[in-house]
Amino acid sequence: MKFQEVVRMGLEEYYDELKRAVDGLTYAERRYMPGPNSHHVDFAIWHIARVEDAWINRFAKQATDQVWGRGNWAERLNLPVREIPGFGPESGWGWDGDQVKNMPESKLSDLWAYLDAVRADTLEYLDSITEDDLDRCPDAKQAEYSIGRMWSHLLVEESQHVGQVAYLRGLQRGLNS
Image: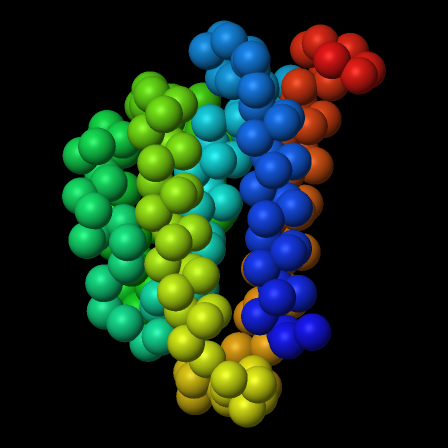
């Protein structure tokens, strides 16, 4: 089995779990925050997509634009975010509870569309690299952070966020809902 197949399986598994955890939630349930310094489901979906977009495009490809900008997603999601020098559009990392709570409303279908556009871009990149690329460290400022390490980090981080979404669902609907 090729490494691309393993990574693809991981990406598909957490995506399917995310879809299952969000399925049927009302807008109010998607925006539920169990505490003042937590986040809600809509934020998690957007953040998952933004993180993947940034890691693949800014870090791995060393591209200056991301799916976010190419698809005019700030306007489509009603979510103007600031540009962070050397990073690109912010991803929600470091946001406080008020910023998350006041995140503008987006249609769930638009959040999924952004994640799907990012995922298509991610899979295209995944299919374009070789096993030798996994050892490459494209950012001199992170000389020990390789493409292989990025894939590992991406799968773990996004899986954690899927678990958070499932937890938020369970808090509101109970077990096995």
